[in-house]
Image 1 (cartoon, helix red, strand yellow):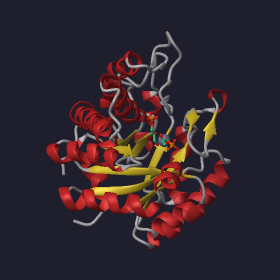
Image 2 (cartoon, rainbow, N blue to C red):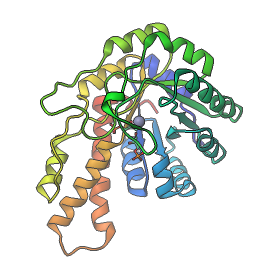
Image 3 (cartoon, rainbow, N blue to C red):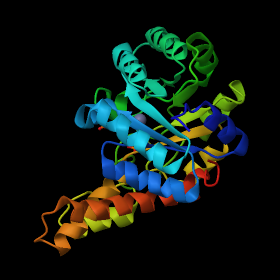
Length: 311
Ligand code: G3H
Ligand code: 13P
Ligand code: ZN
């Protein structure tokens, strides 16, 4: 099967009350760790590339790696641009074979966001590509979208119908209290998501796929491994997995995770290097990083997403 859009995946996920994992990728080991887990569990996949990842690994290399993953596993795999921030990068990814792009106009005014998103939708749909838009602002840092805590804002449910109908977007990322990075809540703060907003959005857009960004749970075991082997990560608090599971059983069809994979990879490498300080062959330390990614993705598919056996 060639690389697919997320259209069919989301339809089934919505009806089946589960979600598809959207994992950020930027090298061979990350792609293999994710796809090996998904292949064992027969899970559909979204592999997503940020503009920083694309600059780092380069478009052509990532495309070939993802095509290789699809050819080897036969899984339905969608390759998606994460947080495209202007028309040009979306166009370049569409022209270069991506099957899905996100245009993140959340830093713009509501009207500007609609205008930009609609421009991307027109070009994407003419080329058989689907588009994710965003309404509301998540806190945290991505390459070109840096949102301070104070500037973050929840999605306003009363805007979603108009946004979706005027832009034509195929899925919508909303802000309900998740945030990017490893430090989502302050020490002592109880994690909380605005399920009331999600419910209201679901009522206003029945059957429509919603996306949750900033959804890493930050597995403390891996943070502990990093710190036991020379790292200095402060205690981190992510999104509790039961909340994500709940969201997946509602309108959320795509759950974005990157930080968890970064932490897992780093834990594997640090642990290996601390135990084997004489090693200098990258394969020796990258393999345990890749193994950790596989372990984490297996766990997400089974315990958070519920998409095992759905490929
Ligand atoms: O949401 C952002 C992703 O974690 C990608 O991060 O822009 O540092 O590649 P990045
Ligand atoms: P995390 O930082 O929580 O992994 O979120 C990743 C993300 O939203 C990518 O778009
Ligand atoms: Zn994101």
